[in-house]
Length: 297
Image 1 (tube, one colour):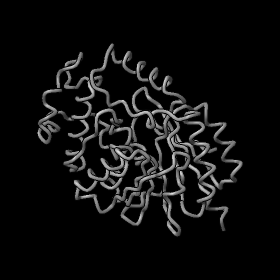
Image 2 (spheres, rainbow, N blue to C red):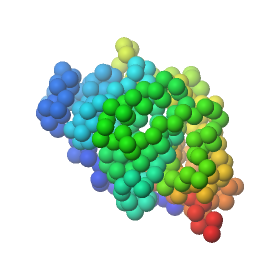
Image 3 (tube, rainbow, N blue to C red):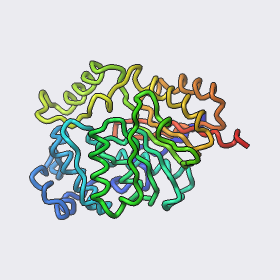
Image 4 (cartoon, rainbow, N blue to C red):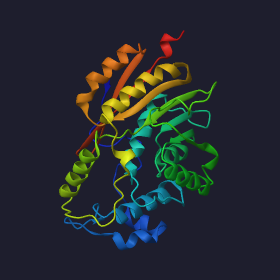
């Protein structure tokens, strides 16, 4: 298993690597202004425990950096951190040698109501996306949002996954080929574990009670067996679509899962495996990538 580490912090091409210019953000999205206040060091900031503030920041970042005027999420659905989501895409671009344009096709497994990966990837690299989603509310929401952002709408197709047991079956059509697949899997193994994780985050932020929840719906946060079981199913299913994709990839939150995932990859006889380390402040994660290509000659 080959490990590729970058310097501590965000990817070198990440637009948000140097922090936020709040006056510039407020200039393009006035709704952010009411949430910006000096922090303990006297610098402009927001209360990251306030979900409305985080959503307003995301809207401003997408307008300023990517000229995306329409982004929102329904109450209760996952509100993603834009810089961290950008890093995943930049590392995938490295994986395919910085190829750009609509000829690069990417499948996003479980795009969510926020649709953030297709929106960012279409803007940053001009890639074409298929965004799959199991939840019908999220599917309809992200479809309307994509259509509202006319600058990228032609690059993003939304597809409804009808089976929670599958990632690729029912989504990849006969004769289709993708350069990349990507996924941010549900990390937790139960609703209780997910709730405990949310509470730990709130305590870390010094919050006792959250009035409005954008922490994520149940299917976004947990599944039976957690991320290890989810990714193992994905690996097994990827063998059935080995000819349909260049690189299969997924986020892995827990490094201790990597040895067991390597065993699963060995069983399906992949050609190459890469682990790409990522960091955003104190938070660390990694991308697991595998390909069958060299064994299909």
